[in-house]
Structures are given as structure tokens and as C-alpha cells.
Image (cartoon, rainbow, N blue to C red; front, side, top):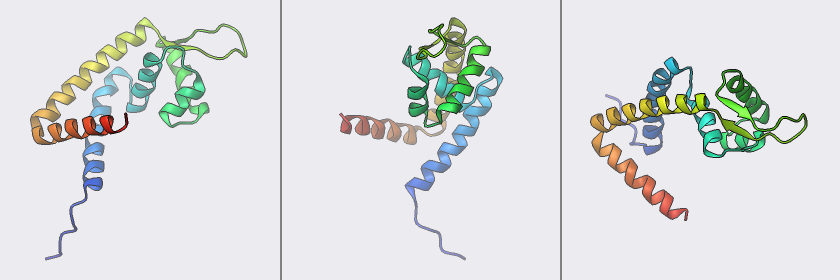
Length: 139
């Protein structure tokens, strides 16, 4: 019988993350969202007036990818650009439709959080404590 490799918290977190990201994407799909789109829309809502370059930086994507994603959001009525002049810096903001979509997505997140906490109460508490320490350590 082959020897088991030592436990790796890194590999364990990556595995748990992939499993729940797949569940998250599946739950967001009926809303027309992916994890990336949800994050981008959340950044726009969280920082009204955000520029494309800042959105790209925060999302760790290229500015070109941010422009493409926002163009799709604008076409869907989820985001608008507060500037009407060509060449002016963009000031992105979420529309009422975008807010409604994010509210529906928040319900999805709450349901997944509840499922995860029920299936993994010890891990949920460890993650809560670990995040609290990480946040406190960065202040």
C-alpha cells in the first residue's frame, strides 16, 4: 500500500475552493453571471465612479478585458458610464437593474454559505477566525 503524502493546507484549500467555486458558478448561471462577472459588478457597485484601469487592477485582469466585460454589462443595462464625452475618463456605476441582479446573487451566496456551514461547521468557524486574524494583522 503506497504511503500517503503529508497533509497540505494549501492543496486542501485549493481543492475546497475549486469545489465551491464550481457550485457558485452553477448557482449564478441562471442569473447570467459567473464568479468573475459577479466580482466585477461588485467592484463597480462598491466603488461608484471607478475607472476601467482601477477595475482591472482590483480584478486582476487586463484593461482590455475590463472594457469588454463592462461593455456587456452596459448592453445588458447593468452598468452605465457616467461620462458622456469621448476621451473623458470613465466613471462607472451600477444601474438599478444591476443592483437588483446583485441582490438576487446575494441570495445565492447566502444559500451557499448556509449549505457550507451546515456541511462543514468546524471549517466555517476556522475560516471565520482565520480571516479575522488576517484582517487584524493587516491593519
